[in-house]
Image (cartoon, rainbow, N blue to C red; front, side):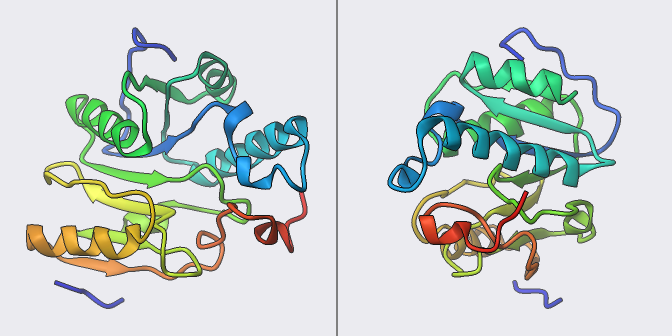
Length: 200
């Protein structure tokens, strides 16, 4: 129904009914497709800097990082975010684990934002809709930002063609949804050409 428009023992203290969830993989294996133009150290620094930008864009909303890497968890704590430990590999599993953990703590809506959005400025406006919000990438293939009410039994399909697959899932659930086209949030970084126009 389209509507236009730290570690396993970490305790989450929820202060808001809306939370931003950022899934992050180990920095040293992030952005491997950039290896032809960047060294490993450069890719690590890029991954950290982009994640910092997304954390900053989330303010004033609280943030949780979901990860399965101790270095990422330690970094997340320096950013004053919460940490949710993913005990199963894969992006879809990590997001589901994160959403489940936040739901158990009473969060009503989750903004799932990828950590590779170097132009991100703000995220809070993505949650001003009562149904599901999809922010597609500029190719209308991926879903760099996805907002769901936690009451929904939503299945995640990150990977190729995730934008269309996520829309199909919203239709399956029969809930209102919208596509929110945002120039800052639609620019994710996967390939070398995605680095064009990025200045830190």
